[in-house]
Image (cartoon, rainbow, N blue to C red):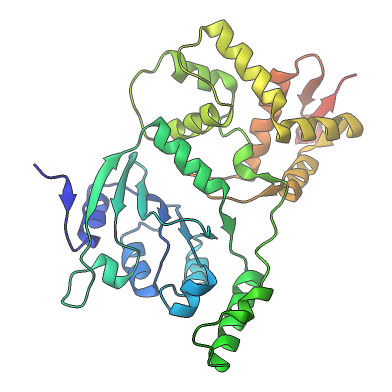
Length: 318
């Protein structure tokens, strides 16, 4: 039996939504507003997802991608990211399956008509190596901001006003969004190292809920190999947590400050970390709570925390 699906590709996505699945991440070089609205209409209001487009200047000039997807997504609370290197068209669902398609998120790529593109798609189940590749793409993606959108829009207006058919000169002065020193994906996604160990050793079933995606993230983040004994697992994990550039910089800052309130830690993370799409819900409070637990586990002789006056405070002990 063939694993290929033929036009309309939209029906492949719809069948997954009809079975109760939800969209986590979309990678599509070209995105047009009509195709995007059709896909988003399948989404339930309480679901979180993110969109990654290519948005090279020549894409915008050629009209194969619409700038106006940004205000539309912003109104819905869906973040938009750009990655100039992507060529894949991948629709990742929370069940751990993905639709690998030749079709972009456009009307001609999603729907069947006499003028539409002829596309195919296949539904695949993601494994650990797939997630590793997905996280690498995620780490190269940059969040679109109001300022970046406005700058691109003005450059496109200028381009059209100058009637430049084969030049993209106005875009040469458009700087990409500023990247901060670290990515939000550099933070542990799970609450404790024990949670990661429990699934590593005890849960041999393949699950694709958000909890499992968080554990997968941490196994990949700290490059934990398969087949370790329990002693080696915790030894390798602790060594790689402490060697993480993000953790090392935070610990150095904590050594200087001696004590940091929950708000101070949150501000430090906000100032140092670039937002990137991750296939689980991001919550800065959970990120900070995770850091507290992971640091006290990694540095038991030097780091502790308590909760005076209802606020968590982390301490460095000389």
